[in-house]
Amino acid sequence: MKKYFAQLRPLERRMAVGVLVILILVLNYVFIWPHFSDWGNLQNRLAAARRDLARDRAVLVNTPNIEKQLKSLESQGEFVAPEDQGNNFMRLIQSQSQQSGVSVGSTSRQLTHTNEFFIEQVQNIIVTATDEQLVDFLYKLGSGSSMIRVRDLELQPDGPHTHLNANLRLVASYQKNPAPAGAPANSSPKPNP
Image 1 (cartoon, helix red, strand yellow):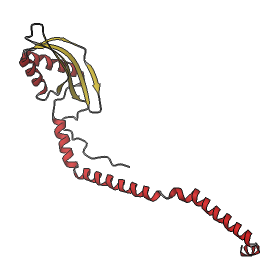
Image 2 (cartoon, rainbow, N blue to C red):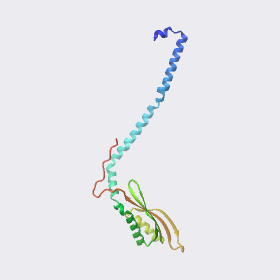
Image 3 (cartoon, one colour):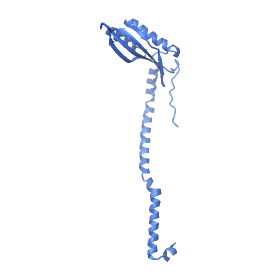
Image 4 (cartoon, rainbow, N blue to C red):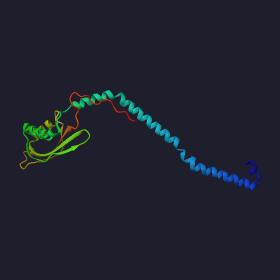
């Protein structure tokens, strides 16, 4: 290589060095410069992994408390077989309406919605009552272990303005897959691969 370079004239040497410099710059531009941000990206990923690790360790330390809360929440409410949920829901509505003195005018067909943990029964009813009776009815529906709540409520006075006509959308939540009585809940978390 030295012999070849020594045989060149000064102008040819300058051109060869210039071509070599341009070739080195092009190779740097194609292969090296795009990777300048890799170190910063690696640092960001490392910081995110450390944050995730700290969060996961905190959850693992708190696992016994979470399991206690889970067991207490699972024991709340009452188990109702899926085939009896609709009848149980209507029975609770009718018994509370009789106790509170609310007259149920009409009901619609029950709708069922499910998610990962609950089966929700939705019932639309129209009731007529005084304001005290209606408040007592709604309070008693929501109290206790019935798991019934009011999703929508529309109020209108009746003709002589002595009672209220209420259009209610009631929702009852039932456990989808309750743990059998006496069976321990799955307390060991699955490790992530």
